[in-house]
Image (cartoon, rainbow, N blue to C red):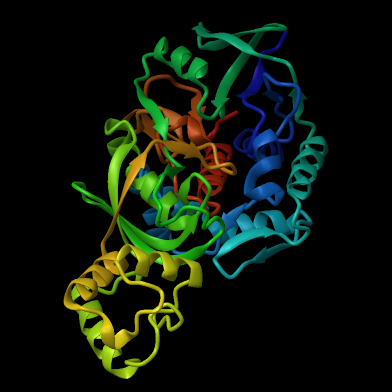
Length: 403
């Protein structure tokens, strides 16, 4: 039996995008996708809260790479070949209308990930891609320039293999037998578990803030969301991504410093408070919140500063002034553990990037072996960036692979 021209292992976003683009470019070639589970594109289905955040409205490669804690240097060249605008064009040419939201995230107009799934399945059928479920890969080996892949459904032979299996430890283990080094995986996007009276029962409150990890060169800013387990939101998730390995080394026990006024330094805040003591002299501190913070959060902050509800601005003493400025701009919280961010399953770790040729996404260790998506030691913050990495790698493979 003739070997399969391109065998793609992994029936997710990167796998389908690679297969469709290869089959479109090489219509006479045989392209097969293997999926170990009962369904294809499961992560696409649940991504973006079921809406599928396909990419981000960031069209400058130099700016785009700054959203990748791991992969920034390696992705600059590839993004010049296939960037976010190219992704939008690709989907729209295939009948998927997209929209850009205020925060830059891009979704199908239908607000349904099923639209993306239907597009992939339809395109795969048009170009006669053979996609097979319930095919768990057990072993990959090379014999006489051909790949032999042992699956739960039998043995397959292929000329080229593309691995798009994400953060699958079994596949990483298999790659070690093919001379590849694997950077151990740690969680990349997660929320902080914090038990503190200042945020207890403030579930759902969100405000712009800056956050830094005490005793580490890690800081971030953005919307901070208070949850029943602690803190989440883009500001926290960005911090977790950039600090993935540092925070893992700390066993997720560390302190953060929160500035509820975002980037206003404590010294400026003290000046503001002294001015307010004059401007709002006869008004109570609780009912007059000059910093625009959510009312319940403001109440907790003045309580933490030792200020009673009926205290007037003019009556705040020197110690309370100092405490209020500290609670507003440098509030310390103890983080004890993490929780998985429900919409993301991203890890830092994977194939050592030095072992990949990023002009083609081919292995530097094994000829005719390619990688796309999170199987590589590449990850990004939330907002459609992890999908863009998958689309770019897949597209470049399709244009590099030789038949």
